Amino acid sequence: MSGGASDGSGAGAGAPVGARARVALVLVSHSQRLAQGAVELSAQMAPGVLLLAAGGTDEGGLGTSYDRVSGAIDEALRVTEGVVVLADLGSAVMTVESVLDLEDGYDGRVRLADAPFVEGAVAAAVTAHGGGDVAEVLASAEHAGGTFAVAADAGTDAGAGTDAPAAGGTTPADGAARATVTLRNRLGLHARPAAVLARLVAGFDASVAIDGVNGASVLELMKLGATGGQELTVTGEGPQATEAVRAVVEAVEAGFGEV
Amino acid sequence: MTLDVAWADRWARLSAERIAAARDELTELDRQIGDGDHGENLDRGYRAVVAKLDGVAGGDQPPAQIGDVLKLVATTLMSSVGGASGPLYGTAYLRAAKVTGLAELDAHGVVALLEGALEGITARGKAQTGEKTMVDAWQPAVDAAEAAAADGATTAEVLAAAASAAREGAEATIPLVATKGRASYLGERSAGHQDPGATSTAILLEAARDAAAA
Image (cartoon, rainbow over all chains, first blue to last red):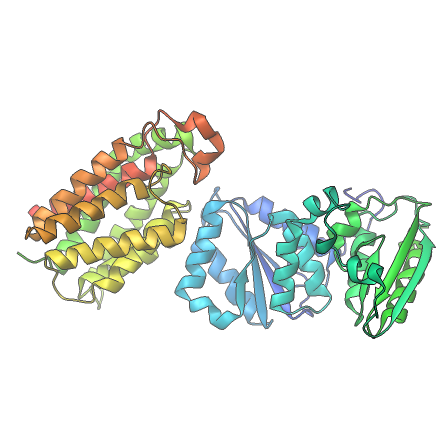
């Protein structure tokens, strides 16, 4: 699913990218290269988010550095209202907790996500790109951990999905819309198009489900494994349901620039 | 006999000496069930502590109280260790420093210091006894210190009781199966090895005892 074959952009591949989003991410790993790689991967899907890597020890070895973590958080807080931190193994988590402890949590502006490192970073970055606040970005990261389990027993676990209310059909709150559309690009909903759709959906005041999964979750969209030629069912509800569904249909029909 | 800032300074420096001497032993223990950097990481951390102590001693503001020394050790370990023992011991010294905002410690003050340290480690590492971690040395050390102080022991006797209990606790981790930390990935294979974190805890508390006897 690397998407590298079809994506020659390179534009979002550098280190810290622009900072239009309200929330920045600090990615803390034992390995500097792992942290930097997670930044690159997330930046490809969320070019408008400030992403900072804080990996390795001060000497560049494997481990975590209190000063690197606190330095990255301070840097992010100078330009954003909040920061969500993701960390990999035990001591990375503990180092972040120590920083938050000593700074009294930066008055709630900085939160550590209890989330898988890569999946959580990607999901959080896309939500931040969509303008989410700290709580929303944090929730997105933490929900990423359940993505695989949700997909595995989607048949029995309706409560975790967003489609349950729509399917029930009992008085949609504001408006409801439904459409079907066929994927035109050969690779279908791989990483980049999934991120495009998730960002698009996040921009509307509506909750959108695509084939029953949360349209604002890049990971759930990717887990659909939808490929070219496949028909998708798009449902929406909320004040902007019609506009949101129409936008999704248009994006899919445009082939994400890959046709 | 009470303990003052000179004791805290001696404790920190003696800890650095003992950790340097045990560096290879700790690394070897960690290599068996962890990522093999415990000795190296702690040695780097305590070297930085001594450098800091020398630096401030030569500067304008030497640590005035026990709590100041502990706070210096805490922040230095957090920034320079690099592994889990940095935040763990860092938080331990930090919580210990909060309880000891006093110029001198009596036996009950020593108990409060040790209780603060244990509280910091459990808060940070979320481990309990029996999980093959440094808590398996810290908990018996605190229990022994509390019992000794309740019996009217001196500060030196409280520290001696804590150090012996920590050493026994560390040795008692050998048959345990790790359920916390990097060693937990090994499951049953972690049994038969002494936990490196519990071992370094024993070394640090023995240094505290010997600093009081000096």
